[in-house]
Structures are given as structure tokens and as C-alpha cells.
Image (tube, rainbow, N blue to C red; front, side, top):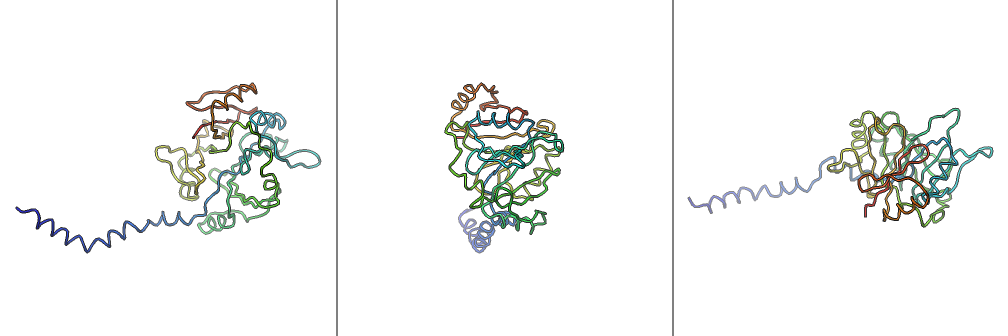
Length: 281
């Protein structure tokens, strides 16, 4: 049998279908189209932690090269300390009180370049963000209840705010790492929490790593959905350094005990919160 006529016949049959097939391939799925219109997050803005001894916690982070940029006080008593990682990222430290005696992770905050757009996008999809308001430090802020009643904050740095006015300041050259790349959230039901971040907040899955999800946008930053049984109430922050050897040198110089975790370094603050240092370059 001559194969050429048969192939020609197939070609003639397929040619009218070509535009249809190309259309199917080129038109994105409904989910991809929806994600392309989701306002991006600029990155992780801060992690809030309650500590037993505010002075001891500030001293610990100072040994890592992170300075207190500013604080908020009432009647001369500091109730919130802002430890600066870089111009866009902070660790917020709150002291324990008689009313709030439990130390540990409090909340995670994301930065957005257009907070109102993020808020309106969430509200249009049936989520329940609070109204956008001006916070104590002078930035825009809204909050939302996340999985297992964890509070999620969103902020936009505004001209004139404490954060904005501190740009370029309080940046020690010997910081142990330059930026925060991931934060862990302890969950009892990790599957449901992961589903919320992927399908409600439009975070992106990471191939081969079911515990981490990417923030929407191009920050490259992540959230880890960790098991409560392993992390408990502690905070876990992952920092990125250009040099693990330099980071190790700083830890030894400051007489801080480091633990090697695979190719990374880990230290704990006075309350047992975990600081993991990675080289992703």
C-alpha cells in the first residue's frame, strides 16, 4: 500500500481543524486567566512575634546585625519594636503582658504596591478582609482571618510613615543575611491550609515540595505550611545570605550556637524561635 495518499488525506482532513486546535492551545484556561488578573504581592513585609524579654530579644537580633529601626511606646513603655531586615522587611517584637502572657508567633504580613486593589480583589471573591485603614506607623493596612483563625495582615508603605522615612537607615553591613525569603505557618490541618493559600489567595504551588507555596507576583518569596506538632507556637523565619561562611563567622564572633541543617545554618532566639539561614545564590 502506498503511504503517501493516506498521509495526504490525513493532512487535508487536519488542515481545517488547525485554527481550532491553535485556538485551544493559545487561549488560557479560566484559572490561568483569573490568576493573571490577581494583584501581586510585593513580598513578606514582616513577621510579628511575642517575646518574654524584649531587651534580650532586641540584643539577640542586634548580634545578627539587625538594628531596631524604631518603636512604639505608651507612657514611656515600649509595646512594639521594629527590627529591620531591609527597607521592606521587618521583624516586629511585642513583649508579653499579663493580658497576653504567651510568647511565640503572632502573625505574618504581606506587602502590596496597591493595597486597595488587593483588598477589592479578595472581597470580590467572597473573602472577608477588613476595611483598608491607616495604621499606627503611618502605612495602609487591612487584615483577614486565615486558616485556623490565624490573622493575616497586608500593608502598603506610604510616604511619611515610620518605615518609609527609615529607608536607607539602620542597615548594618554585617547583617547575617540580606532578606527574608520564607516564613512558616504552623497548622493542624496542613492540607486545608495549603488549599486556602492556593485556591483562595492564588499562591502558586512548587513542584516536588508540597509544604511551600510561592507568593503571587515575582518576589520569589514563599510561605511554608508546617505541621503544628513539629513547630508548635514558635516562629520560623528563613533568611537568604550571599555567603554561609560569612554568616557562620558572624555567629561565632557573637558566640551564638549554630546548628547545621543539611546545607543551611540555624539559630534560635531566646524564646526558641527558629532562624534558618540559606544561600540561594
